[in-house]
Length: 611
Image (cartoon, rainbow, N blue to C red; front, side, top):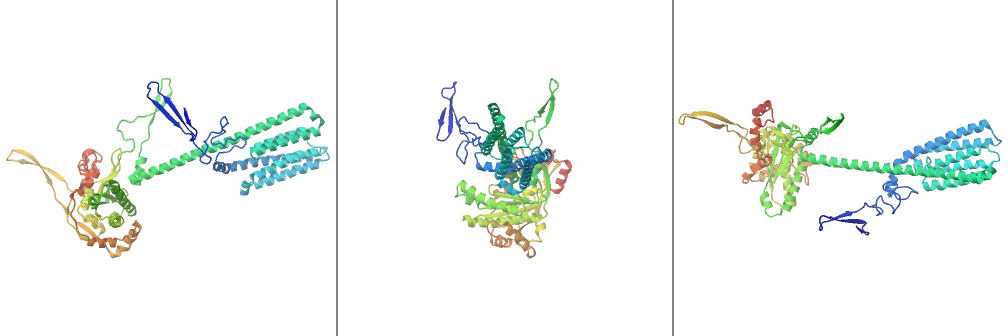
């Protein structure tokens, strides 16, 4: 073993006998007290440690940290006060009994002095008892205890000033024993005060007894009574130290338990925040509640006893959650893509580019919360979110449009802050989606449907700096926004039909696909109607990040923008993002009858809606 005295660390070196070149080194670094720089829980070599974090002194047992000691005194103050009140009640009852005895017996001519002394002690004890019910008592615990202790000792020793006493030597001896026990048990005083006071009282008492009674001067009586007093003091010291050790140990254990519970609560909140950042709160709560607990079964052993065992799950079984997929109607989907991202990334390092994206998407996330939208995911420079899912929302289309206008304003501010020249192309569509969580590892909340694909097409066929909406979204927004006509796009919400017919020329049957062709009208947001401008500006002011943003200003800026060439590759953002095991969402929906995750009636409803 090698030790490092300067740092307090010990290193243990072990050699493996089977391998001459194998060396195992362990560093042992004991915990340190930050306040004093000493080792925690270790006193001087050979000293007895009373409890964890003890200062090492049995004469005054306390923590090595003043903060812990103050907390201990405050937490145990109600118990200390109640214990002192019990002592005062005992003194009052004893005084009442002695007063009755002195008044009835009248054993000497001095009985009235003893009666008055007992009544004075009872009154003082009663006053102290009332005083302990006030908050100011906490500041005068030690002075109050000293007053009672000196009064008890003085009244008992004052009985020896009279030639005739109503109390026999046996009675005074029993009273002295009671007073000594009160010093160590019920009267709250430190050990370094209780021991000298008790020793001085015992010596004074035995000296007065030997002086008053000649028969008590016998050496056998003196030695015997001194041994009795010594045993009583040792017993009191033992009770005092055990009480202090129990209090400090319990306080330390409870404190550790509270700290551990608080740390667990903090970790739980952090995990909940992390889960809620990955999926909506309602979905996260449903996933957590749906987690199956481990099932326990009783197995009967050979001797008839039952053994409780936990059942094992089959390999590949989902143990975190049950599969759940929901159909949501009246949902608006927003897709946004950064125009000029390739040019921006051509002259930047990967770290700088990721930092810029993090800054920009952070602004979008803040806008998403302000606009009451639910972020779904990001893929490269593509950002998409929904409104009205998983919780229904009556103004879902308005939320998505406000989100889109806010994104356009935010990226303009981003350009000013970072000296860039990028823009946003935003597409919004309203329809029906399937939402839920797919997979067992690294799963996330997502949405699927042909309407989602159509929203992605709205983005890819849009113009930079403008919000491109479909006809379905326009029907919900025509009373609030001014629009201009856009190009028609192909409606993907159609189905292919398999038609079998007989080819007479080849004398065979042929199967052909027949698909209806539909288009939908699209529109670009150009401004806000005057009767609704106030509400929109109020929301935009609350959703800003660095500057005030106004839908009217965004709409005015949109008129000055010119169309740019559409990058055909952006149409594949959603397809790449939502593919599961190399199966695209459109393929997944086309095979939904065979996958079996929808009932037959639900599948028919989806067919009717064009999903």
